[in-house]
Length: 101
Length: 491
Image (cartoon, rainbow over all chains, first blue to last red; front, side, top):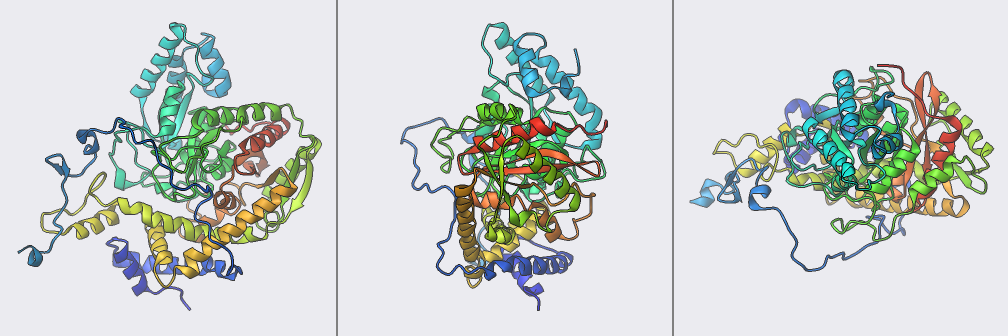
């Protein structure tokens, strides 16, 4: 049985903000199925009582001294932006017209 | 003077310091070599001719003013395109960052500049460092200088190929699952993955933050150690950087080069010398083990049973972190924006931008990670993989109670032909079978050339405990003293 369906891959693409094509969906569905069946092997390991490791370095709450240091100018920070206006990043429309009106 | 591009970094630095050549002359020789061969190798995505010559002139002026130069001053270095370089294009091998010129330098790049090294340019890589062949670069593949029809490894195939093609004596890579060591192995060069947290990630474009580790690449072990010393050490700008002094990797490489391993216990990982590797690789590995024993090392076999689950655990953890990290590519602050016609919503523009900007492997991993992290699947996939990570760490800890370092082949096979695995992503993943456990544990690992199989290089991997990077350099340098270095056929 397949680990993942074409419909599930389409849903993942939407969650991932990827406007994939129909051809890509066909390709990814098959490939992700192979990969998922392989990585599911982790389930064979008896690990019920084992604590998870998120990170190999056990450091927490690393802060620097609260002192002013040099940083980017607004011009530098905006230098790579696709669109900018009045020292701010300009974004496409974020509200639907219904809500906006 | 003999060919400057064939020299070690150590030799070049000595000639520059002694005034027998200039940093400009050295840099020009490497730029000329790039011009001569890189249309066939394609190791570089961007060559910074003006920046390199300016940096070289600055070194020559400092020397003329009587300044005492550092151990790598005037030595050219190629930098993987995963590190931010101020004013110099940084693409991560992706169309989504095409044309981006970062407004700041990564800490490692800053340290390279401070040390007087000369950055030649940015090297090719699998997009976002996801791949094992450099074929997933959005700008076309890099070719292996040993055989241009074969892959140079990945993701850092550009850095490794630049070394093997004598375009640079030093290079920087980054290793998340083997992206420094595996390209090193298949190009006959040295690649070291430092202890996680031993080299700064500030300015490294993030793929999998709990695994990403930048490190040195070179044609010999001492040069790698010298570069490691320049780039390594605590960085307050990286909150996962280890606030401790680095072990003296240069002294360890020099000690190893004396060829004496008396009293050193080495463990062969039993799970990695079974049927996993091809016969030619195993033959070269076995000969190297004999060489290490002749140098005085005591060799035992050590079993690390959970290593068998490292690859599946890695391909849940790394994609999960990638799906989160790559959310920042939203077409707002930097890089590509597609489909912004004034009518489409932010979310539509974002989806069209990411669709156009990311290649297939990056999309696969983002979706895989999104799946593994989604409620309902989290415990069985991401959560379970994190528990397996704990068990792999315990295997390492137990092994290092018995031995000083672990050894294995670096890769299961020699460089495979281009195109052989691109249609089957999971086959591509298997290239990192032996390198991945170290990333999950966080300790250091190095690949050092150990022989040839069918005329192609084979690498031996040395893995050491966390913050014991010096041990792997000692063993690698000792092996190098016994087997020598390997020179590819003329291009």
